Length: 426
Image (cartoon, rainbow, N blue to C red; front, side):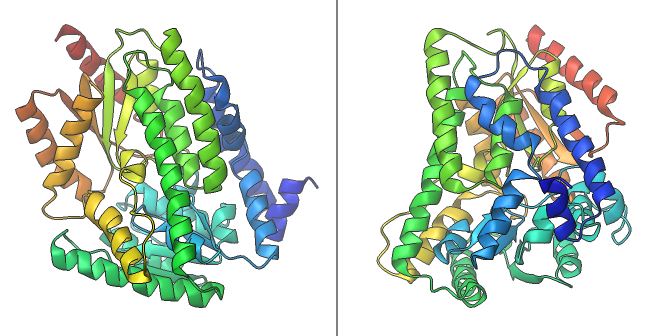
């Protein structure tokens, strides 16, 4: 029995299912990524992690657990990683981006639930995601009704902490979120057995800020007329950022950015400079959901920015460092998380529309693809405002709805192709 099989067996996971999963996910990886031309050499690290995302990192987490550290699984960008790190915990993302997990989720959830929720629940209940099996505790949040109820199911056999996200971003909402952070600090202290000191919290804030700065540097390179990396590769990096050790991830992204900046100087673009530049906005694209990026870029365009939770929302804005007290640090975390993440769960949400327009201009895009996962009512309803605002700004927009299956791939490709033709004629 090889080491991955042994790990899965130790986690109580079915080995036959393990083999099917390893065939499905790296297989999808190979189809999407390995056919790309002129990839940056420093993608080698991310390529290695993606090809063995259910082997390398889970094995590391298990070794850290043996040393007494707690692994905390999180679902959303609102959860402040800094608090977990300050208590010597380890943060990991959780599976939820493949059709592979959906059927198991549909055994307990309505079919008209969004695929991300169904896949997450299915990955846990089907025992087919090592991150769900390894995590000592899950941290959820109340960003949508579907997730709130799904967390009740996921919390039946694993400790679950819920952070209650306000419905708006008013001063009283910010104050409520500061209270949520302070409650979270106490919960994490009790669970890990480690005190969150202001020194430790400031240190973890700096670590996560450094990761944000590295990812911001990656996106800065994508603004150039000479595009040094594909949008598909950039998305892969963002997805891995949810799982990887933050300091190692920072070092690898900066290593890649050194190469990208040199490629820009050398005029080494991954696409023809006349290729339409696309911004994708909407619902998050959890690993291994590379479907839309693959369709867009294999149709002759290039994705240069993502305004979503697996894009700019994940790294935009640092947290204030060098706070004097836990209270100050909690307020600094609130300023960043509640004051600058413009999720569709908020009403009103004009700030997200401002973000989409600003980013479209900063990245000099030719058009915006407004992408929605089926049955995500929050983003589907907000499409009305996104489309209207982009029309007012004179920015072409194509709204699409999809799920994790490939059954609509050709239909999507046809619609994307027609959109690109319109952009070419503009």
